[in-house]
Image (cartoon, one colour):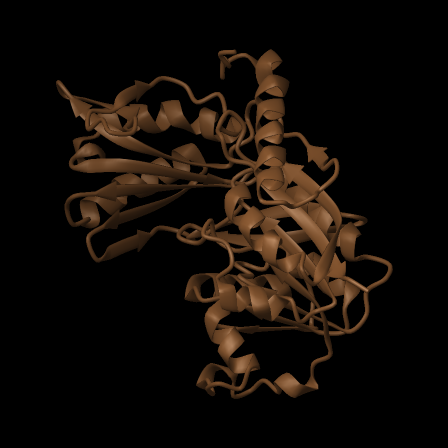
Length: 365
């Protein structure tokens, strides 16, 4: 069956195909998951960030995207999967670029970052240094569009106002605010992100005790709402940008039981095993924690064997995955010591083959 991405009526069919593929991947790895809880996305208007090429042709510029293996982009006239605010900003930005040689000259990319709460940031990227003339025109454009503007070129970042948007997400009966920085990772689908946060929080509510350790915490997206269920949280993240955002977000939400350390998962494993000391951990007394639960949200490569062994030490494991294949590989090992309590799938990227998922495991008796 051919899926028409412009037809919301076919959304359920594409989701059904992905769920079937997810279940097959788990079965082939020998992992029994039962029937996962399914979290649907809005079929259109769900994507909060987007990146387009700026294509120059016959004195005009256009939005373009590249198909895999093709150098010449195809022209983008609309972006139905994009958030309404992105679609609202695209035409006037393109008109401004076409009207201004200063703004358009050697501009090769435009990136949009928006929030469900109505903030927007546009990054224009160039193959030339940016000067005062560019800044003057960009400031005027920023006023016209009511959206922040950033200019980037080689070894240059020119922020006119700020380099982040603030997102507000409802988890249970509390609203959380998040600083989402232009160059940092953020969840692209705000609706699904809210569903993921609520599922994760509900999964750990009620019977939590002790402390939580989180690997790959990013900007604290999950950390903030999960912290309420534990006495203390130790979160690790390797990106400086994300660590700074996480600390900002915890302070903004008045959460005071979280410590963040800039370590990779592999480094944290070495620290917990006592294999080597880290100056970045000098202010942390690992022995003072009573870890009962570990939360992981790894990159597409999944967990390395040492991290698999590490998380198997804890009574409970909450695993968010963006790659069913590596999740299945990890679960095939983890389920030797732990049993699966619940599984959920989240359609973070409708109309693609990608499917996000969450698994809660507890130590087998």
